[in-house]
Image (cartoon, rainbow, N blue to C red; front, side, top):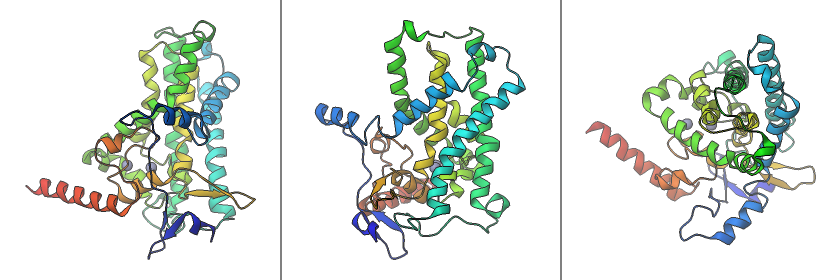
Length: 334
Ligand SMILES: [Zn+2]
Ligand SMILES: [Zn+2]
């Protein structure tokens, strides 16, 4: 088993990577400027492989796969359909690629798969009795719909000059900086809304839908209640408060729309044709789906470490989490 080089299986057959979940050397004290600079340009690093990919897909989506901004001044149903189809194709291709390789082709079997079981196909817990079908339904019926409507609403403000829109040629540096900082903003926004929806009333109302996926697969990524989709994609509303370019909105939404696929794939690594494998950074968020009350952030900002909810996959983290939950329930009783 190639996975033995990178991890072990516990008694119940769950795969545990040897590599602990960690953060890049950016927000550390004392500062490590050289290590931070090296991480930014490394692979994997800040830009590659994921972030530049989402930025490029977002740029192509705005400049080549969208009508001009004027078309958003008086939105029509046809405009909605066109954008919905564009976003659906992006999601189908990207999520579908992970799903096809890992869950249909299954060339690597369950090597590097955290949970030894495959997605449920006969359970009342999910719509149609099928975890994947339920997730796919929520992804398109609610997720892509709300993504598309939000995109149209924000660009409607821009097309009618209710908010300030920049021209790239006048603000090249601002444009490039904002585009490259989108990942930071997404991380912070996701952490904030994720903490919010773990508040018991909102959890019961909305977030429990996402957490039905204790054994996540790629299609679990956007499987959310509509209220969670609204909060999740609200990251793009930031631009109503800054001078912005429509591409910022589209890139941010593409980032939010596509990035959950690898993080929910359910595997630590994907095996290549030549037998090598590459890490897809899914363990931190898998631990959130397994234990619920840890790793609310899923990215490069060490927010969980700062606020005491970080789980790096070790036995010590497991014990800390147990103690924290014990204290929490004692407080509730008092
Ligand atoms: Zn999740
Ligand atoms: Zn959660």
